[in-house]
Length: 132
Image (cartoon, rainbow, N blue to C red; front, top):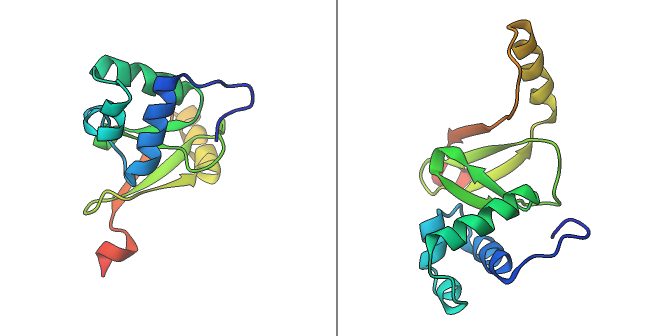
């Protein structure tokens, strides 16, 4: 799952695979602590952060601000911002499209003379499993 023409480096592939296998958002240090990452020679936090920066630019990874963690995009890279529903208990994170909310937020920003540069929407609650 990468944009057409994008070639991932070994480090970027290792980090993306670790996130894909993680099952939940992971911090850079949690990625670094994974044996599969260490076995591939990645031993420095800066190496992980560089790979994450590139993966974010390629649209393959999202940063979850409130958790200071990262997760792979669950579908093809997109220009549309996404929102994230985060379980307070198990940290399961669900990516949802922000299409309808984006227009509303941009209109309200415009009414207040505010220029939107980035949009990060995170919703906290409980997943179906934890809510039981």
